[in-house]
Length: 180
Image 1: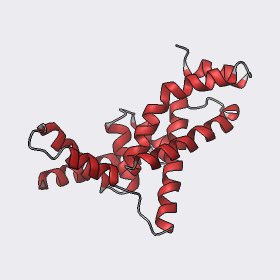
Image 2: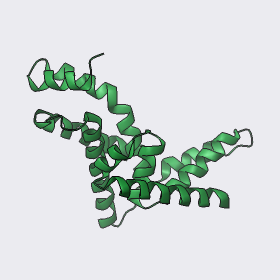
Image 3: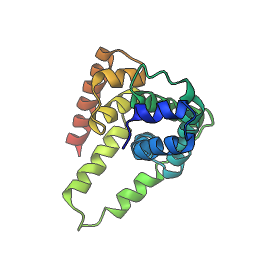
């Protein structure tokens, strides 16, 4: 499989643009979707935001200068689009739906469910209660395994700020889980 850089160079050279874009999309769409879904929890909203992200990537890929990794740029766009959505919801007086999380909790609430599912539900609840920046930093570090430099670039902070946000988030998550 071609690297992100090779696909972008071919896309920018107008060499089979759709095939190169599709290869990038297939390679990264699942991670982008799950990152968005962790922030908004509703499947339909996450799908809509992800579609907006990929449209924006298509529109701006010609101007991508490869000064940073493609994934950093991609997650930065996904982060900004998701924040824009959340802010719109708050202005309209509606909160992003938690119906998918509730369905997930109800479906796994039987006595036969494994202990790991209960832990995951507790973790999801704890993460959902974090302030937005701490939530995103925590998810990028915990779920994606990104280093602090990449996280700082995505969320628009310093490396020290990313570390501080992560460690504050970890303390809050631990505190919340201990209460369970």
